[in-house]
Each structure stands twice: as C-alpha cells, then as structure tokens.
Amino acid sequence: MDNSYDLIIIGGGPAGLSAAIYGGRAKLKTLVMYKGTIGGLVDTTREIVNYPGYIQVSGPDLMKDFKKHAEHFNVEFLKEEVTSVDFSGEDKIIKTKKGKELSAKAVIVGCGSEPRMLNIPGEKSLRGSGVAYCATCDAEFFEGEDVVVIGSGDQAIEEGMFITKYARKVTVIVLHDEGILDCNKISAERAFNNEKMEFIWNSTIEEVLGEDNVEGVKIKNLKTGTSSELTCQGVFFFVGMIPSTRFLKDSGLEMDNRGYIPVNESMETNLEGIYAIGDNRVKYLRQVASAVGDGATAAVAAERYIEELHHFNANILQNDKKTLLLFFNALVNESLEFSTLLEGLIGENGDEYKLVKVDLATKKSLAGKYGIEKAPTVVVLDKGVEIKRLDCCMDKEKLQSQLF
Amino acid sequence: MSLQQLNSNQFEEIIYDNAEACLVMFSRKDCHVCKQVAPMLEEMKPQYEGKFGFYYVDVEEDKNLFQRFSLKGVPQVLFFNDGEYQGKLAGKVEEEAIEEKIAEVLGA
Image (tube, rainbow over all chains, first blue to last red; front, side, top):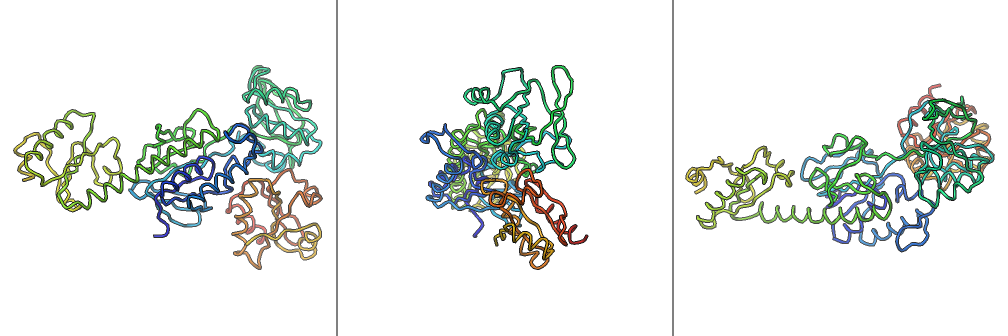
C-alpha cells in the first residue's frame, strides 16, 4: 500500500530530521510530515553559534543540510498538517487536514512548539496592527518608532536587539528584579550596553492599548501593584513557547498540563511504538544539539520495536507448532509461580508447544490485541490463530488436562 | 498554483479600476509565518477561480503599498470588493477564517 510506512515522523525540525536520518539509514521506509517550513523553529533563527561543527550558521542553512542528509537516505517528505491520530492498534493511523490517511508501524512525535499568548486585552485584536511575535518578519515596520518587548529569555533579548536596528527605542518589560535577565550572559551584556534598550523591572503587561493600531501598553508593577501606561507603536511578545500537541489530546498519549509528553530515556511514551522528541517532550535543555540526540535515540528505539514486531509476526504467528502466549505481570508473585508451573509442564511433555512469555507492563499493544485484562492469562495459538484460553489454575493436573 | 504578485500599478488597476473582488496577501521573503499562509492560499485559489481573486504583494519591493494601509507586520491578508477595502486578517490565519471572510465580502 502506498500510504503505509515503517516509520512516520510528525515534524520537520532538527529532532524530526535527525530521527529521519537514522530511520532512513536503518532502511526503514520513513516519512517526515511537516507543515510550514522545514526546520521548524530553527528556520526562524538568524544565527546559530553553538551547534558543533558549525562556528556560525544561519538556521535555514543548517536545516537545509539536515534535510539533504535525510534525503540521501531516501527519506520521503509530505507537507500536510496532521489533524487526528489513532494509536490504539498495531498499525498507527494518521489523518491529515486534507483527508489523507497514512499508517505506520511506529510514530515519532516531534512537531515543536508555538509562541505562548498572554491572552490579555488587545493582544489578539491588534495582531498585525502593532502586536507582533517575530522580529525578523516585522521589525522593519517600526522604523523610528517606540517598541515594547515582553520577556527576558534568549529570544526576547536577542530579538529585542535586532529590533533596535529599526526602532527609535526598545523597552523590555522584565518580571525579575533589576539586573536579572533569563537570557545567556553574552546577550545580557550586549543588551545592557545597547543605547537603544531600556528596561522596566518587576513588571508585566496587563493590556495592549489602541483602537486601530497599538498606541501603548498598560504596565503592572508586581512589587507595588501599581499600573502605569507607556506610549508605543509596537509590542513584541516573547513569553515562551507551548508545545503544538493539542491534536494528540484524545490519542491516549500521556501529557502534562502544559502539553509536554513525558518519555523514558529511549524516548518511549506510555504508548507502545510511539515516541516523543525535541520540544514536545519534558526535558532540561531545548537546543538543536539536544534535539538531534532525541531524534537519533527515538529512531533507534523505533527500529528495534519494529524488528521485534516483525519477529513476533514471523516466528509466532506463522509457527507450525502450537504456541502458548503467557501474559504475566512481573510484579505479582502468583503470576510468576504460574509461569514456573507452566514452563515445567511443557518441558516434561516434549515439544508440542512453544511458550512465549509476554510482560503486560511493556507489551501493551500485544495485550490490547488479545484483549488481556488480567494476569496470568494464557492464549493458545495454532498457526497464529487463537484456538482457546486456559483456565490458569495452580493445580498441575487440571492444567495438564487442558493441554495434552 | 502560485499567487500572482502585484506591483503598485497592477494593484491600482485590479483593485480600483477593475474593482475586482479579491484578497491580497502582504508578505516578505524571510517571514516564516508567510511561508505557512501562502501555500494554503495557493491551494484555495482554484476553488474561487472566476469568483474571487488571489494576489500577493512583497512589502520589501513595494513599500508604499503597506504604508498606505498602515500595516504593522506580515503576513496580512487584505480583502477588497468594488474598489473598497473590506478588512484584513493578520498573522497565522486558518483556512476557515479566510473562507468566512470571502463569503462575507461576496455577500455584502
């Protein structure tokens, strides 16, 4: 089938492209789905100076290299927005906005994040009329004018300095005490030395003022509780990012209250065959360098998972011998005792049956496939087809009579 | 299908002389949000063939046009009918919002 893949990666940023490179090299039929531009957030970054091997490179140039590398390993690309997913079965289903349906054995989620909104009055209604989120796009429109920047992270301070190329003055509204910025030290130093940059400390914005265009902002001092107004023609919001994972809300994928997906060190989510990487996962550092590691890890984990899946299908479902699938819970003693009993019984009675033990804690999709709710449960397969289930009693004779 | 670019003269001609019902996206080359909105408009265009025009203006090449509408940023999609400005949608707009606005402009 044309739309079925081994591995589908949702997101074309550095994490997704790295996963694609590893997936492609492992000879998995790999597809990268993306909306917007290849490179994600990095595509909007003018200058990157801390990605190993590149002393200085623009975001778009670096991402072009990533993409070229993935294409070298025959990775396919599809520019379409994913609107819903069904991760409940062995084949993971992905549906796009245009109604296309694709399937994959494993899915890696790395669809990045979007600017967080403050949701204050005027923010939405004056968007494009003075409210902005992208300095590269919009700084030039504020030639000779007064601009307010909200936030003090790397993005806020670096973009703020870029805006000073055009604006008369840039006033940065900072939550913290005087002198404290969230950004890196080099940028902070440069900002403090920039004549056009001013700072208002211990403050936030409660409203963007103006009818048709931005005319000012209402600033609230968090220490004194007092409000004041500042005249300006532009307001740039850099108050952090939120993960773009809303389309996964009903997928059964575990997320924290902000929409980040918790994973283990193999990038595995709570769902088997589904991985989360880069800015979509709970993590300490959000950089290209760390995104690349996530992508590589997830792709290798996915490759092993797919291999196990193939192995199961080829060796168990298509085995000539009868197979006993024993679903057990390693944490429950009764489960383990039963396992020992069954193993002994099969050993004593020649090689009529092959025993496959399945840990319920890690093989959730297999458990789901057979509708297993309690452990122990034994499913008897003949040439891959279920012929019966055993009454899992601890009485050896009773058990034996069900099998031989 | 790509959008036709308008310079100042063509803009005058299509919007005011011909009084065409249409939208004009104001964008610039290095704006990543524009790169998301443009392909969406390109895809919508054929459905409105002969009923509603789809154009774009590069704000770096035609500064006077964005100044005339006192725009503060890109992308912005401006709507026109009968030689009159009918409003705009700013930022990363959704297809549904564009469809609604077109229906509104055509219904007016």
